[in-house]
Image (cartoon, rainbow, N blue to C red; front, top):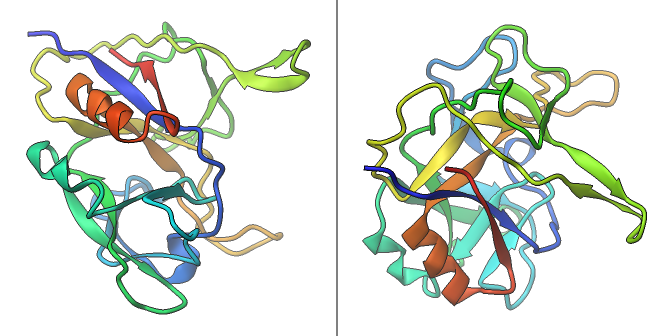
Length: 214
């Protein structure tokens, strides 16, 4: 049975830091020795100075956090666990969670797909170094992501969970502090089911947008 899935993105302006530099621990089982991905965060996930009066926010590192009391219906969805996200400056849990998918979506056929570019791709695992393809808009005078179209070589008919990590990791990984670089991992996108997409649209319609992934 075919299901519809969406690439999950946000219009929220990113603020603050999260993850590696703040001491968040990551599980690196089966990760690439060259670029370090894939990794999964281990509770607690640290962020720094969350915006006030927010039920959702995203950091400059690309991590999304949700206020559990506002998004309490998330428990009806499958394929992930919610881990506590804690303010690094206070070390207190204020109700924010991070959604940790159990599985990764099948990889895209990069030769057939569009809207994605490859820069400094890891030559070892081929999982990190992906970027949104940007086209300059002469009217808006800004760079805008191109519309994406994805193709897959593997069978996607049996995918049943509501949320996955993308196989592709966007950005580049730095495993050492050198030449001004800081230690960080490239990040996968969230890929979500149609019913989870509708839930987020109802809860925060102005904050999220979705690109058809499958």
